[in-house]
Amino acid sequence: MIELHISNTCMFSTTGRNAGWQRYDDTRQSFQDLQAAKEWLRSEYGTARRGLMYCDRKDAAPLQCGYVIGFRNKYRNKGEPIMEQHWVEFRECAPLNLKGE
Image (cartoon, rainbow, N blue to C red):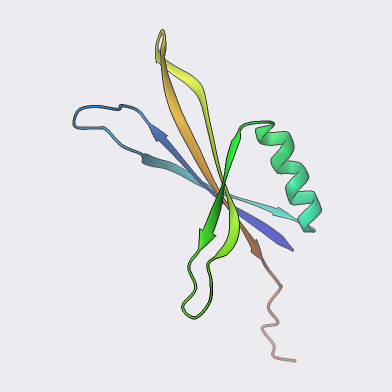
């Protein structure tokens, strides 16, 4: 089973006290396989700009584990877009046998 961990961030302001990226939501999506997860990602985000997301490893090169998807979709005031980035991490999950058999 594949699970997507999605951290939603946005930049409400580019100047002042509230400048910078702020996380506002974390969600998870589960899929049977990697192909289904990628299809959902394509249908959810379409052609939004994607960057590669990496996880550092202690004794090896960084591992690509997902995507950073950036877009502008909301307006606080007319003509003032709110920029968003969704950090999407792919994880492989397996059921746990609690009886130990």
